[in-house]
Amino acid sequence: MNLETKSFAAAISFALCCSSLSATAANTASAAFPASAASSTSVASSEFSKNVELSAVLPAQHYQPTKENLQSRQEFQDDKFGIFLHWGLYSMLATGEWTMTNKDLNYKEYAKLAGGFYPSKFDAAKWVAAIKASGAKYICFTTRHHEGFSMFKTQYSDYNIVDATPFKRDILKELADECHKQGIRLHLYYSHIDWYREDAPQGRTGRGTGRPNPKGNWQSYYQFMNHQLTELLTHYGKIGAIWFDGWWDQDINPDFDWQLPEQYALIHRLQPACMIGNNHHQVPFEGEDFQMFERDLPGENKSGLSGQDISKLPLETCETMNGMWGYKITDQDYKSTKTLIHYLVKSAGKNANLLMNIGPQPDGELPAVALQRLAEMGEWMKTYGETIYGTRAGIVAPHDWGVSTQKGNRLFVHVLKLQDQSLFLPLGNRKVKKVFDFVSKKPLKMQKCNGGIILDLGAIPTEIDKVVEIQL
Image: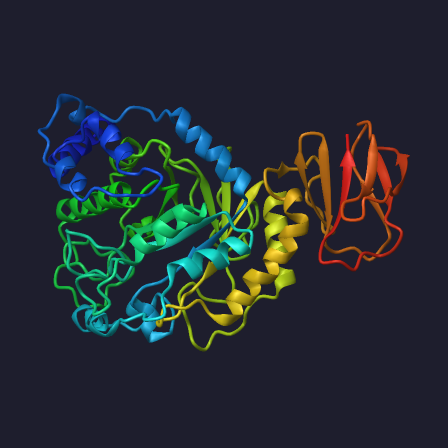
């Protein structure tokens, strides 16, 4: 089957499984997320009950982001700092989010965890307030991780936080309401993998969970995912981004077609401003709005997951605060506040956002050490946030001593590691109007030289981040 025929067939199958999306979807979605984040429970079912239209079975057109989407990208780049929250049934086992597949736990036995999941101390207002105080501007929450359990009320599976647990509360709804109330953007993680559902085609993970049919039923599973995505984009207010994960699970089946173009079109139709990112460890595919790097800064590949080229899309690097994504009771090796701040600064210096992860406890609280780190980062951001928010990578490329960020003609030099009081900056022939310490505002001496200037810092820097502002 040639590429054009495959694209046409994929479009038809998408139309059949989703019963078509019409042009009215955007209007329906916009009505579903007023400032109060009120939701309409009838949107998801009505979206999928429309008749098949001719436009729905045509091959996907080249993606053209809307004006609203381009604005979202800019705001995303301005925000610079977000918090990732990995939370699911796996928190009860306290051994990380991959325990189900790592220990080959039977899917029916694993599902029994839901009957005891009761996070009595969960308080969305406290979560969001603590995250906001850290200086973070958005939250990315795992709505459904690879274990297959939905942390939101869904009508397409009873394996969810409301129907399968004694807690009976929609975690995502409470979190979304607080995000909208407190002015924090909400991004939603959604796994393409499911180690629980029998219709999910098995890849290289989750093969020991006891599901009877390795091939699954792709059309059934694809329809399920699109139904859930529709719920997420119509029941929980304005969503900043959908953060996909799991594409790599089918790398053992190179001909496997995830039918991403049609799924991406669905998302952009429901909420045109909603960005799409995919943690596939590849150069971004058409229809994606930002590029992510796992456990690495753009251009680095220390973890072995980020060897892909850097695109021109907005960038984001995700990293753990300790060692795991999900809660692990034995993992108390939290990175120091200095290390976390340096990671944030280096991300900004490489023109990327930092998405810093926390694994909530099974009782519904954020770990005490994580809260401490959030508070300490927030104190630092009160002083230095101006050199991070709204900036782009500066004209001085990253060096061993640090990075630079820039906002118009204001260049912020972030000295993170320097055993000298002098620093050469390769500014070429650019005219320098002022040079001063960002905090004290005291002028600093400089000397013009071939290729730039030499700064006299007065002493070897001892701060977590010595910031010098240069006005060009």
